[in-house]
Image 1 (cartoon, rainbow, N blue to C red):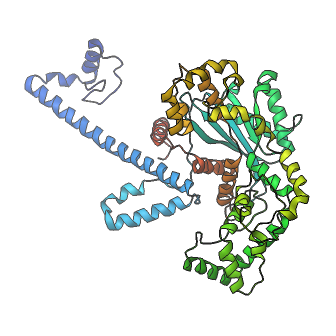
Image 2: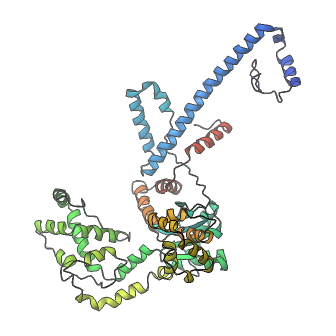
Image 3: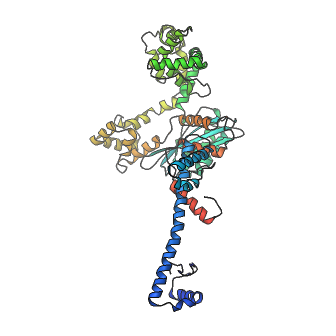
Length: 519
């Protein structure tokens, strides 16, 4: 017997390897083999063993080839998804590989034929145990006018490792009220088995369906958490979104009209566009082109103005060469600039650079200073209220010990007495500094850092994902299902790699139980 398998009949029905069971099987199934004795018996057994090993080797070789093909299939599918290519491109990749095999290694062509690259998706499992987590939520419509709610989770582990992952992309086919948004968020959190007690903050835009305390998402969430945790929960209005709202409140229309007009003159006409690109290349400009402004995407305005300002001199020269009247030097550089801004431009770094120009004249704009003050007084209040806490997080060596919470005071004093920790704080990135903290010596300081590091400051990651969504679910791919869209965007936005070995192992186990399934 080899293991529990009979070498003569290859039967595996010997339930227990006891002498009585073996003898009974031998006498009832193979009575004629009792005549084999001595050397003949040994030779027969060795021959049967070699035969069994040979048979098993054939199956093992096939199993390994099948497993290698499955791994290759997952890896290629992962690349297809991350590059935002249609799923059917996997079949094109396979055709290319087979053509290459014909030339390079024709003997391996059969193995490449077994790689499955049909229109399938990869299921990705993430299992990360977090100490705190926060969420960023935003909503946008795709090319089929379906409202898509993006839910990102930012988690911090016990060692202060940070993970940001797309928890769910939820299609909202009907109404997009706070109740529907909360239900989608609740399902996403529970599907990931995240404890509600570890939720530190949520970041959203300022829409009533999000921030409403009664019928909005925040209101439903706080009622679900209960009064104690609701009082501790931080809710932030995306800081970048607030910058965009300040920009709308301030009178940017005249500037944007001129910028859009100049960009359209360059880009909307193919001859002008080519000539402008060649012009920039000839003079070795910092950038090779201007970019369009999209009103729907509120991050677009800052990007357009930043690029336009960087190329202001080149654009002016090009427009003059084309015989187009330009007031660019007056709009962005000269004495008659008409941006209604004055004084503190903390939240508009590009404007700081522009208005630092020596020819800029502030005198014309004192009349709208009150508008500026009103815009900023209504925004960024949440972050101003947390200034002391954020300062403690950023530089625990600079805070007044008496102003920090009581449970942190002794640890702050001890930390300030450590020259080694002060040097680490000065030389290390902030996250690495807190990762290096002794959690037994500074337990409260470490926990405080974990909580605040877990928080999103903006919904920028959602805006990035929506750009990828538009690229994947384009007008030419409107039939892409919501399930497949979510799978693709998860792969495209993750910093983690799929556990392909685990996926292959699970698939192999499934095939052993359901042998009719294709590999």
